[in-house]
Image (cartoon, rainbow, N blue to C red; front, side, top):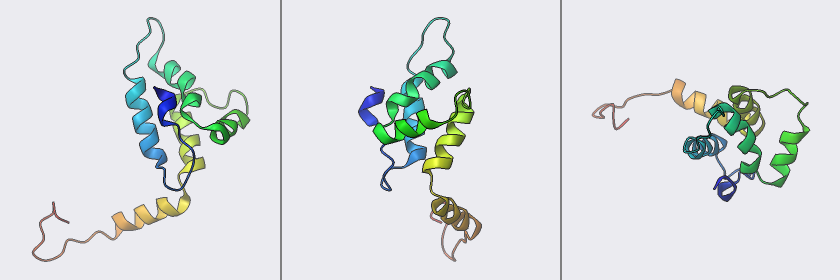
Length: 105
C-alpha cells in the first residue's frame, strides 16, 4: 500500500501531503514489540520513487534515527524555500475585508 502513492519529487506533488498520507497508512500497521517509529523508518524508503530513494540512501549512515529527523530532512530537501516564503508571506499579510466573516477570510 505504501508503494502505491510514491513521492516523485515533481513540483505538482506536495511533500507535506505525502508525509501526512504516509503517516496515516503506517498508523494502520501494528506489529507486536515494534515501535511505530521503527515501522515508519523502515517503510519510508518504499514511499519514494527511484531518484528520491537514491537521495535518502545517499545521506550519511546513521544521520536519521528518528521520525522527526526524517521529516526535517525530507521537507528540507523537497519543500521548496520559495513555497515556504510564499506561505509565510500569505499568513503574515492576512487581512479580513469589510463585510467578510473571519471564516470567509
